[in-house]
Figure 1: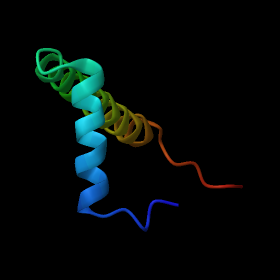
Figure 2: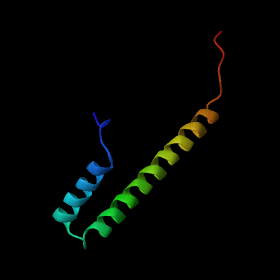
Figure 3: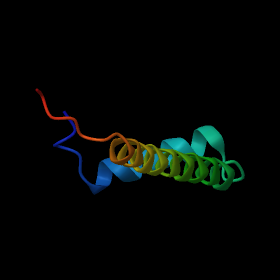
Figure 4: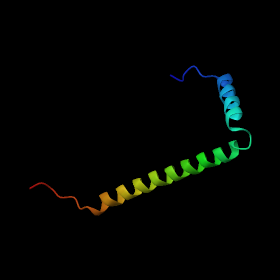
Length: 64
Protein backbone atom coordinates (compact mmCIF):
# COMPACT_ATOMS: atom_id res chain seq x y z
CA UNK A 1 0.00 0.00 0.00
CA UNK A 2 2.81 2.45 0.83
CA UNK A 3 5.30 1.17 -1.73
CA UNK A 4 4.87 4.12 -4.12
CA UNK A 5 5.75 6.85 -1.60
CA UNK A 6 8.67 9.08 -2.52
CA UNK A 7 10.54 11.92 -0.89
CA UNK A 8 8.08 14.42 -2.31
CA UNK A 9 5.23 12.67 -0.54
CA UNK A 10 7.09 12.89 2.76
CA UNK A 11 7.67 16.63 2.22
CA UNK A 12 3.99 17.19 1.48
CA UNK A 13 2.94 15.28 4.60
CA UNK A 14 5.45 17.27 6.67
CA UNK A 15 4.12 20.55 5.25
CA UNK A 16 0.55 19.55 6.09
CA UNK A 17 1.58 18.61 9.64
CA UNK A 18 3.31 21.96 9.98
CA UNK A 19 0.18 23.77 8.85
CA UNK A 20 -2.14 21.77 11.11
CA UNK A 21 -0.09 21.75 14.33
CA UNK A 22 2.08 24.83 13.87
CA UNK A 23 5.78 25.15 14.44
CA UNK A 24 5.43 25.52 18.21
CA UNK A 25 3.57 22.24 18.74
CA UNK A 26 5.71 19.97 16.55
CA UNK A 27 8.72 19.67 18.94
CA UNK A 28 6.46 18.74 21.86
CA UNK A 29 4.57 16.30 19.64
CA UNK A 30 7.83 14.65 18.56
CA UNK A 31 9.02 14.49 22.17
CA UNK A 32 5.79 12.80 23.25
CA UNK A 33 6.02 10.24 20.46
CA UNK A 34 9.65 9.52 21.34
CA UNK A 35 8.82 9.01 25.01
CA UNK A 36 5.93 6.71 24.12
CA UNK A 37 8.16 4.60 21.87
CA UNK A 38 10.83 4.39 24.58
CA UNK A 39 8.24 3.23 27.15
CA UNK A 40 6.87 0.65 24.70
CA UNK A 41 10.37 -0.66 23.96
CA UNK A 42 11.16 -0.96 27.68
CA UNK A 43 7.90 -2.79 28.37
CA UNK A 44 8.52 -5.26 25.54
CA UNK A 45 12.06 -5.86 26.81
CA UNK A 46 10.77 -6.45 30.37
CA UNK A 47 8.13 -8.85 29.06
CA UNK A 48 10.76 -10.86 27.18
CA UNK A 49 13.05 -11.11 30.20
CA UNK A 50 10.12 -12.05 32.44
CA UNK A 51 9.01 -14.82 30.11
CA UNK A 52 12.53 -16.25 29.81
CA UNK A 53 13.03 -16.24 33.60
CA UNK A 54 9.62 -17.85 34.13
CA UNK A 55 10.54 -20.64 31.72
CA UNK A 56 13.87 -21.16 33.45
CA UNK A 57 12.30 -21.58 36.91
CA UNK A 58 9.84 -24.28 35.83
CA UNK A 59 11.61 -27.64 35.93
CA UNK A 60 11.28 -29.91 32.93
CA UNK A 61 9.28 -33.07 33.61
CA UNK A 62 9.62 -36.12 31.45
CA UNK A 63 6.51 -38.07 30.55
CA UNK A 64 6.26 -41.40 32.33
